[in-house]
Length: 185
Image 1 (cartoon, one colour):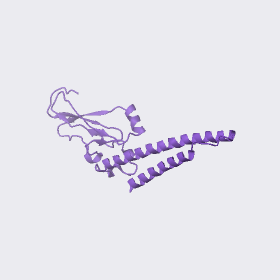
Image 2 (cartoon, helix red, strand yellow):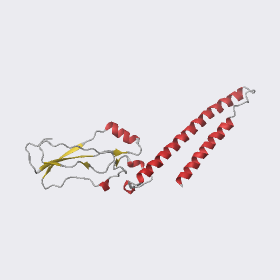
Image 3 (cartoon, one colour):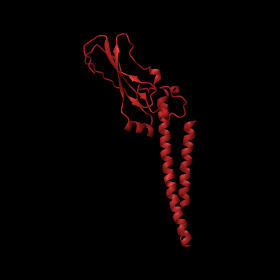
Image 4 (tube, one colour):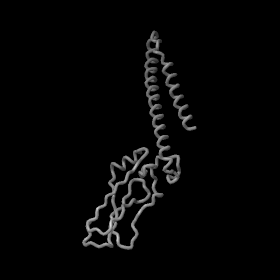
């Protein structure tokens, strides 16, 4: 941007929106410069990256609005109360993942680390349950094959103790449920 002539009563300011933020974010205004330079660094944080958010990042560009300011007009801005901030001051995006909260404005910046820890625990529990599920599926395939072999050959009644594997998988699933119940309490 270049003003045609220097005038102390002129300035510029830029605004931009990103993903699910309800309001436009604005840079600080720059006044009294023919060749103004705006340097802006804003940090965004997402507790989890939803598929929708990743698609947004892949397919959308950041659209910047350039505002010419005249003396007497108020600079544009956004209140800190309008956006959700982390403890480090980063602006939260992709906040639709807070399904337990009806309104994102109900979440305070103090709750974000706590929510993040809960999210990490849930992800670990989910991974453990996936491992148990994988083991049970493998055991199921083994049992089906053993059953087919037992039906076709009467002497193939010796199995490699599939009941023990079932008990182990069931015990792991119970431990996960018990851990989740104790962490929720």
